[in-house]
Length: 84
Image (cartoon, rainbow, N blue to C red; front, top):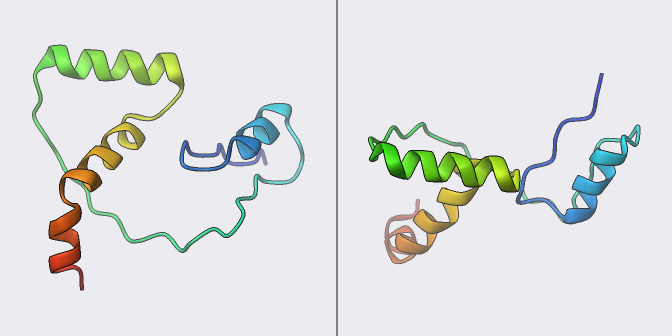
């Protein structure tokens, strides 16, 4: 079984390790437990979706990994206020 593909949030060394095909799965120093996720469906203009998809393809960074930091920054105060 091939090691899993590292996410953009992981260290560059993990991506290099995955590309080289090392037998061990990529490791991330001091990995924090992942928070549960929820699906969010958005309708965006086709031109915006196309631009996002082209960037994701060119950079190898998943669209979700591009959008999540933007949403986290925008809602940072609300997350502090309403975090359980």
